[in-house]
Length: 75
Image 1 (tube, rainbow, N blue to C red):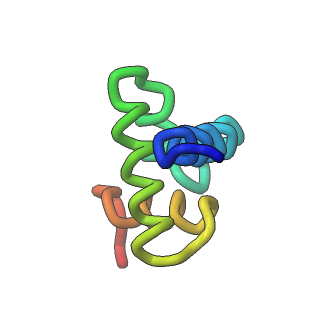
Image 2: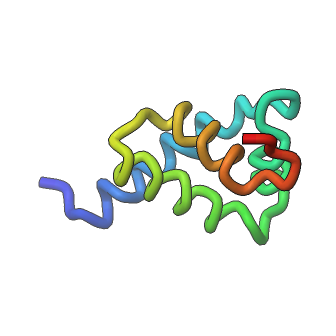
């Protein structure tokens, strides 16, 4: 049986795999933060928290986080 830490790390790995496909046209802030090694872990944690709290997919959370934190957002 996996521990909660193991499950969390697997979840983070899934998020990181999704971020490997980052599209700078769609989510520029996410791509920038993912490509900055010092920001990567906090980005992954923020996306994970968004997935869990809003009960949405990783892809949906990536878009939501980008919109939420983007300075250029018109929403």
